[in-house]
Image (spheres, rainbow, N blue to C red):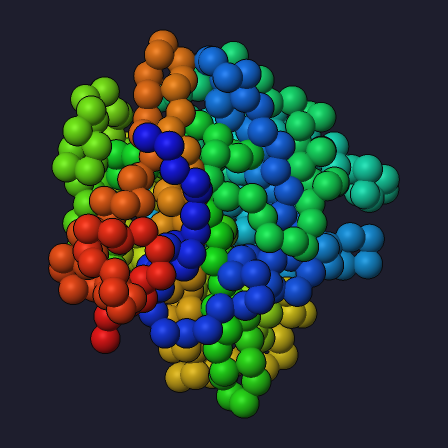
Length: 362
């Protein structure tokens, strides 16, 4: 199948009614940067590193308010207990493959020690999903140089999505997946705030788009390869809203809830985690809980769209031992959405010609 990777909105698939930021990405939150390093030999290695870097952290500012939600703790999230205990983030957030997480954490430690030569205690935050289905994970190819490169070259532009960085070898919902991102802007208490999400998708279930199931066995007739259940999802949520660590925990839980919208199975072996942080200082007066609903909606919608982007932007990949994971066929998805009444075609375009120029039906 030869198709161009396209984001959900480029295909006419719009999640919710809230406006996005200019890039529709986590980097719409000011001073949040993203960097990738991809390790791909075209054969047995399909892995890498993705770093989310709050640029406010440095010599003049050691921590940002943060929280972690453990949807299912079948995973390795280095540094999470201190975030839970103190309610702060002290490092870039790095994502990689399961057996590379420990080397990656040591690399982040190098970064933090270089930043603070006098420090004697640091808390790297490094998460993972298991990309062993397509990559020879036991080779542990991620090095300190890869991690430092991802952190050091992180930028405020639109992050690459799909088969890149920590998403190079991941799969989700029966298809090739990867990295995805999205954002929303909401008005709360008279101020406009941005919520952004970035995901590393690698979990089981039945792909669901705008409420319409899209089983891999139906969309890809050659879908006959083995596929392990579970395998996890990492979700990072950033905002500029004045919320405290307790409220960020509530946002992080909504991020895990949003996985259900795209058909997550929440399997036994799926380590599902969300990390939420705010770029505002620890607020003396955080938003009243009664005003936080728009942020909940922004998290749910941005995570759902980020998950769809992680799939729609991925490409068919042949990995270790010749395993093939197929990309989501955009054409079949759009046809099903039209049939279900979730999309409408432009005037003069019939369902059999569905490709672009679609919009969500009322």
